[in-house]
Length: 98
Image (cartoon, rainbow, N blue to C red; front, top):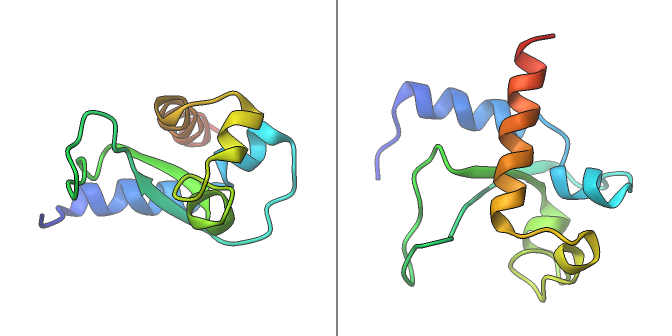
């Protein structure tokens, strides 16, 4: 899937944020922020639109207890994938108004 200039800007905004899951857990982020493409409603090996992303640090994204691990951090924070998307959108909107 090719990426438009607008999608690239959106992704860069998300990457500039602190990790929304670390924020929900109240812990200091230890690794750089990456983006996670929301998988809700997607089939195997499919990726959602570049607009549907969550700002997650590498540990919360691909770490052993992160989203692509055993998801312990999501259970501890009592959030699901769509909550991460909502938190990312809220933060981008909030930062854009300051």
